[in-house]
Length: 324
Image (cartoon, rainbow, N blue to C red; front, side):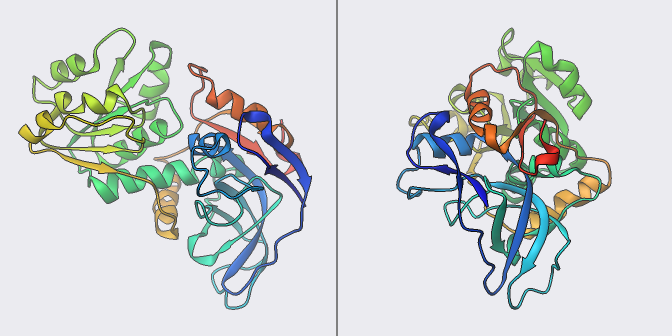
């Protein structure tokens, strides 16, 4: 099979399209013909060497899969050849998704929503699981609460808006002015142009000085450091970004705030919850660009470029018929 193999850490051009052995499913495993995958910030962080101690080279990387079951190993009962499936690969364990075939444990695989294309499904598995774990598993966002989602036009943010709205929250988000209508179309109630207005001032104005119940940080840096200033009493902060510097939590202490940090874990349960939202018409990923597996270096370069103007996710067509 063909796979994009990372043979050294570095820039986007470090991938090599290579012929490698097709995996064989062992007991409890499923072999999937990969139709599509996608690019996440985690992918280019791995590629450039941010997790060098966890990724032995050469490596097949990538974390999203949407495809069709090719074969199953002994003991598998949930799937049969021909099933359409989606999942996130086990992070830092075994080969990733930048290949024509992938083998995974039955326990982390879910049945793909029929209403999503493979490109759409592959754009939702990792970011959707991250959002679900953050908003449901960690901060327990509830009906009627308010939430500020930083980076609402991004891969994670645009999914978080939809999930928060499905829960019944009042959704605030920060985006550029060019993305106002996009964010509102996803369900955002209050849209803040972070380039023109201080988000803390905007939140306090819109909440009569009370602040929001939850802040979801997808950006890091200033958005995390200043979160307590926009937070209500007993508020919760959840972040998916590495902490680049020590945080001063005196303001958070004064508000009885709680902080949560998410590096998502893989399981079928989250996929099934996301599938239910998709089937109810409350969630759909937005694809901002599509590349072929052969052109994955260009996809990495685009996503890694600051202010790239992208909305949603960058999807990768592994099946040639899906390629642009």
